[in-house]
Length: 576
Image (cartoon, rainbow, N blue to C red):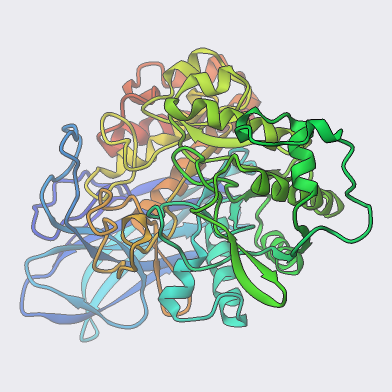
């Protein structure tokens, strides 16, 4: 057997000769995870192998790097920093190593080794990994781990990666809100938190995301809604608008807020229940989630419609809003006025003011500016004390005061950076395919991890990614098997739609997920170094690095590791 120690950023393809540099020692601070790989190639007939690890450290684990098929792997306009442009098998699934694993002749494969630092004393710790066949050692590698004499501070970056709870229900064949569903969702939430997610998309209503117009996703609505048809009894909603000013025949857009308030109050009465939302909040707090991201109040790509909202009407559950609902209509505005007033009161009582972020609509474009503006001002009026955020690419939305927290695509972020905004976020998705960092399967691992330095350099406050577990075809037109389909049925480059795989009892990690965690740790180290010195000193450590701006990404692991080595050395010299 041939074997070699390599960095976690190397991608080991079975059919390619291994040209990666040796990575036989590494370092980390307390509270940090260090990953490396044991690449191996078995010569002989197929066999069953066993792997073991020997170390004084308790937090060392082994996983098997398994292959994920990819068909749509590189967009037509993709740059030259992809490792392949044609379909194939990609190392991505990190399967927990339990028992024997198959050794295939003539193929390079890898074991993934993770060291989770605990309360050990700083110093050097040898880590030995052995591979056996029929009890005989056929491969052995020795790694030297340096535990540095300091602890990384907690993550400051707010990070959300959208968790699709309907996908969990569909894959495991469980009913939404059943006890089994709650159990599985909590495992995914906790796993996400362990990988840096500290904000969770919260489905007040079924999120109107990645859904074909006219289509419908499985209902995951946390808020109970009750509607009583007809005008409310009594005079609690008596209008103060003079008779001659009540609406009659004009377009809704021309109505004043006072007139629309009369329209809203003269419609159905709404009542809301928060038992499931309260349970969700408690789950998040148990798992280490610090912020909630309320699901979008209007549909994606322009805010033209309302999300699917289910309500109990005369004892029967029915859809009361959806694709048929004009977002500017009086009835939906009336509903939002009643709902957001009630919801924000509940959230304040829960002590969550300032910790719940509201969305209007995801990724509006310039032609939606007027409509989005009206709806944004409405949401701002109804949710004082709660931040408002949306993913967008046009600076005009921020300049006109429509988005408090802009979440900008990394390929369009330059104008936002130039204005040095106080609460700037970033995101990438399927569109960020040229120049910038991303986590597509065909990209080198360094291109994923280098985002940590870029977030630091850009003074980015938060990061959003849409696909934690989107196990569906594009536009949610049907489920997929994520072990067979990695591109949402040809909708997005492989690796974009999900970062976790569904295991028998919960989530299974991916290489992309672990590399992004390493990027978050790099960011924490950079911020720690700045706290011990100053920003100018830290920026000097990577002054010559080309990929410090979002428009360029790293190509080789050595580029990233060299910067991290410099940062670690500065921290150790200053922290004692």
